[in-house]
Image 1: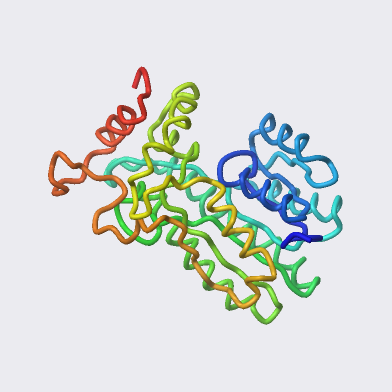
Image 2: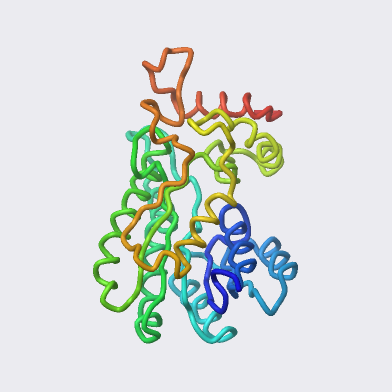
Length: 292
């Protein structure tokens, strides 16, 4: 028996990156999963690969309450229950200096990164209360713990997810519902393509080079991979973590132990924070991205 044998989960952003790795891990451990994602091609392909008995794909925009409800209802309809929801969908969001922040971009970023997890919690909670328990897990970030690890709005949203996790954990604990989040460090996923404003072609180039780029980004000299986060999420969704709630599980290879941030300017001796344009250019050069 796997650690999630017989359990049913919904994983948002489940068609790629951390979400895809977690879908695979859940199925490997015996769970049945609804893959909730905007990307129909990747989502349907993953569901077909893993099999209809174990998975189902539902096109989902986590900024839409109707879509979040539909994904949760799909789990109940096909698999009969809901044991866990992993509020994982996200993107880099609006960037730039604070005095140039685009407020329409702000609204979109917060709708995905904070409103999405709130709605996942909102609609999973009644089902789990009726069942007598469940687990709610969200993706936060080391950017929600420290500075210079992501754009301003992204970092603020992730800090909010961490505190939201703690607040909701207190409310739902009497119902046997555990609420936790994971804080990834530098993990080789497509999100960096969004941060760097890359084209789809450049993003594919980037994915091939990220692991080698990240090997020396933290005290543990190995690249952080989506599967590393999936292992933590699966543990939080399993009965092995039955006494854990309100916890922000940092999975970062020790990167938060550094005095400097994830994005540094070695040429300036660490004294100057590079502009977003400088960060993008340096990242692209390091990744060997053509046309950047």
